[in-house]
Length: 141
Image 1 (cartoon, helix red, strand yellow):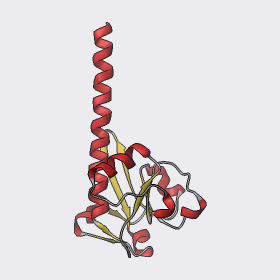
Image 2 (cartoon, helix red, strand yellow):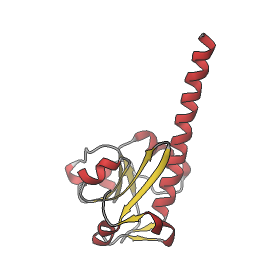
Image 3 (spheres, rainbow, N blue to C red):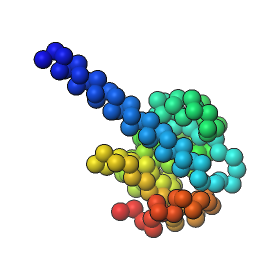
Image 4 (cartoon, rainbow, N blue to C red):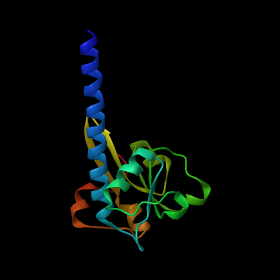
């Protein structure tokens, strides 16, 4: 019984880290496929995600939201001085809760789902590459 419990916990930890790695790779791809009016400086309220993104040296990661122009948020807690930044969320419900968020990456039934709201990217002058077209939506489901 003891070995079964250790095996079960180990499997869960490995699975969770695997999902995190997939999430990081997907986010890196999305962030590379969007264009802002200036160079992208990214910050996240998820420190594990931020550290993982930083370790890959693909994106420009900053230590605080004031230095960033693009935020990746997991929670609906945005410092006042960062409310006017570009916002990408990691929870579907946050698309409704944060009106200036332009897209989301979330997991449903064990699979990643990506939504980029076309009216919001147009309003914020965000350009997307052709590879992101399948994820463009007119409205929140």
